[in-house]
Structures are given as C-alpha cells and as structure tokens.
Picture (cartoon, rainbow, N blue to C red):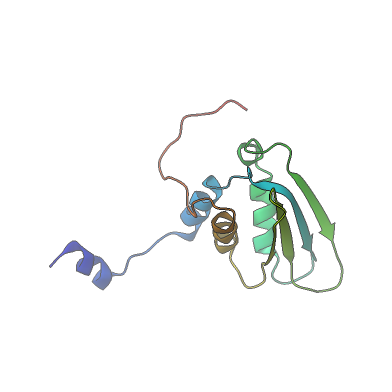
Length: 129
C-alpha cells in the first residue's frame, strides 16, 4: 500500500498551535498601509481578533513595515469583532472574525495580501531587533 493511502487511512493530524505559529511566521505587512481593529471586549467570540492583534504587533512582524498604522476601537455594543486592512493600492479588506479561529484569520489575511498562507517550518537564524 502506498504511503498516501496509509496516511489517509490513519488520518493525517495537525496541531492547531503549530499551524498558528506557521501562519504567524508568514505574516508580512509590506503591502498594508493601515489596520483598524474594532472589537467588544465582552463579546463571547473575540479571542481570534485578540490573537491577530497580538500577532501583528510582534517585533518581527512590525519590522516588515514599520510605517503601518494600527488603530484599535474598543466598543460596547455586543457586535461581532472585525478589522479593516487598507492596502497600499487603496483596496480595503473587511474581515469579520466571528466564529473563526485565530489560525484561519491569519491565513485568510496572508492569502488576501498576496503572501503564502503558512510560513516555512524549521529553525531560523536569529535576527537582531
């Protein structure tokens, strides 16, 4: 039996935390001019946008475009969390993150900005920040 069928029969499993780390590794803000995050902290489904916010504020991600403007709006209206990313060419990406995992949000953002959905696995050389 070929290896493909043995994997299909066994069930290929992946670790969500590992996929989130690979998606975060592929984040690149070169084509992004600004990101406006809007969320209600008491909404039941805001973990994914908080993780996205934390990911784009990481120093290695910010080094890809230090001029990107990240604005956060904290609301109290129980609406679903969302963010609007304005690209360099004037296009606006409006992404509602309700019922999405953080991995899906970051992978969709990467795909819509023209980056690979997942970064390369393995160790990287240390960069000086």
